[in-house]
Length: 263
Image (cartoon, rainbow, N blue to C red; front, side, top):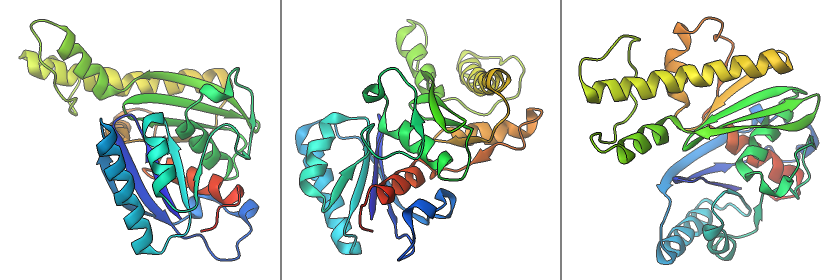
């Protein structure tokens, strides 16, 4: 099947060919082979959205993939994908989920968050914490087989760009791995500040959630997760964190299989 993860900044595409004849209820999310096919900037206009959807449909046909699964947080692209892709299925709160849901408004939760929790439950874990570091940083908590909710914060890069865009004498910078010492110039101070407060802020939030809810596996995913894994050796007790850049896609594939999508 074709996997399409539509985020706030980019569209990530992959292929997944689960073992033929496998029982969907017995598939371990970590064993699903995900083949990355690239990422595309999120189109800003209707023509761009149609062109992207048509390009993905052509890729689907070229690879002989009969089904498509979509996780989207951008409704403006959804209709174009549904029209262009063959056998398309879209993940949301109405899917058959491998966990119970105890959030106040299930429809308001992004599909990517359901996929992240599904990958955890589909790995045989009754409790887990999934941290997805992208445009936003999300922390999603699975406790005793129940998705109890989580936290949403500005992403590390977004926070740096917003500061640069809102402050009269500052310019946007990209966070960069930096030692914990004062920088001698403004640009360096901003890059180091974004990196250190972002990484250590996420690490501290993980610690707080584990202290409140109990120890459990921690998974890092998302485009900015490497910033955390680069620093992990410097953070006491972080060696057990798992980093999987394809975690959301694995969860999407698992949900599609368990909801009857043909691979």
